[in-house]
Image (cartoon, rainbow, N blue to C red; front, side, top):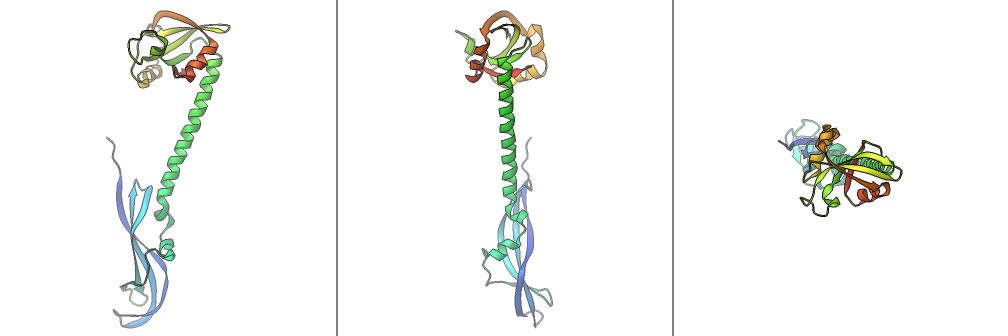
Length: 214
């Protein structure tokens, strides 16, 4: 089960001096400090943003709090006083997601390049995850995700054998390959087909071949 962690907490920050004022609580003149109270809302404490900024004044003599009717909530000093992590935590979260996406894109590109190199120089025992329906005139199903395994390489030709089991999505065949089941002789039928090595890359580009396992 997936849970989303979210919530809020209160915070406060010192904005700066507010000058000499008279305090109605201690009935003395003292130097006041401008403060700001605010609420930080968050998701997983990574994505965070500030709401409900309330400026107020504090008496330097007795510490009593006074309303700061003259302060503008959007005043740059009030905003700057709030810690950057609270103000801009959502940017850090977005940056983290962006980094993950970029890393995933780089990894996918490297994996695709590796597959291309393997297809250009096939080895006996290579396993190709494939949609067998694309290779048949009258397939048993609209999609038949299974495997092809290289049984022989002769110059510019490669001989392939076909998996007996197929699925309606890639996860099924991925599972069989990762579990080692696709390495078993019993996993494949007796049919063999020879194709040019050059055709493998075309099959990869049009989506007939999905992944290369060596």
